[in-house]
Image 1: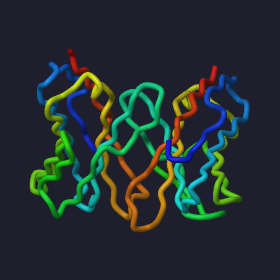
Image 2: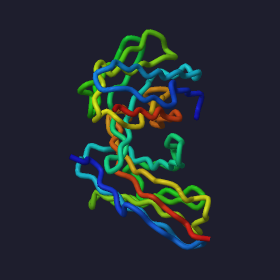
Image 3: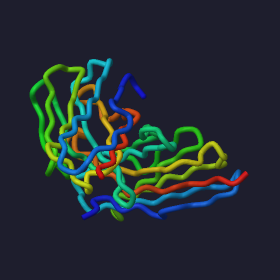
Length: 112
Length: 113
């Protein structure tokens, strides 16, 4: 049973456009929601993370929007660039981040 | 890759053989993790360690064992490899109980024939 459901599976965006990836969860005990970026042949790298006490967090072109009541969170990539082409994973955890549950990933392709 | 190395980086083995993957960190971090990554499943936690000789099971621990005799090394063992254990294995580390970020190593691609 997938603890965190992620969509879409793949996404193609024009350069300069906005990329949006969505995740949903059921376990209301989750209290940490990171997003990871992974390039081919590499390990995932933390991109941005949020806790449920805020509804939005922005770092550069990357923004997490969090809707606690709907149990959903999303990643927005503004002004998408070809270098953003990668696989993105959302995740959620409780208990000091030992049990980190990942979504199934979204392969983003940004077309020049 | 945050001072994490994994060895080997690639391995092909046969069903029924034992396999040990090694994760080595130079960060002196307390927490270490083993994940497997499979298409359609994302990353799933196999086992983790919260100190030397202290380990616990994750979501998909069946068929795997771990050991941690030194802070810097975390070993993952497949006692008798099966084709269903063909995957990419990632090690991750985390510094303290109040730090949430997990840093991942470069991965080991394991193929079980």
